[in-house]
Length: 159
Image (spheres, rainbow, N blue to C red):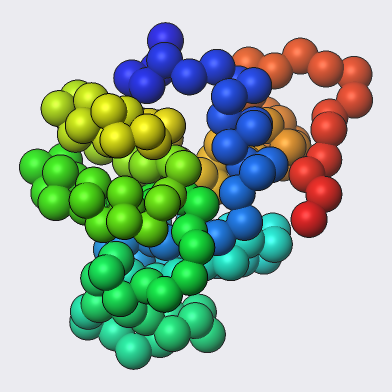
């Protein structure tokens, strides 16, 4: 069981319904996991808003220094920060009316998760959006990874 206790169907629904993702801590360094994830999400039709005060632009997208600087609707706030820093982003996600508060692979903060849920957000913890997309919509199984999904026909996300 995963830290967030979400089913494959719940993750699928999040990925199907989301269109705009604010990635907090997105790095402009091509070798960082956040860069790989953001590039993959952009390549698969998502709008990514980089949230990092250290860059003006990442992957051709203009950066904002913080969540408060975003002036458009956001479906998912995706956190690439240490677990102890996660609570500092909940109010910003709430003000953006984000439906999902996503903590990346290796990040678990139960107190922050409870707070985000109490503010009406679905919380995903210890998962990578890139990996979950490939696992659920296809791609990971080609490399021999057991995706945990048995199907004779893999559904595709239509953008």
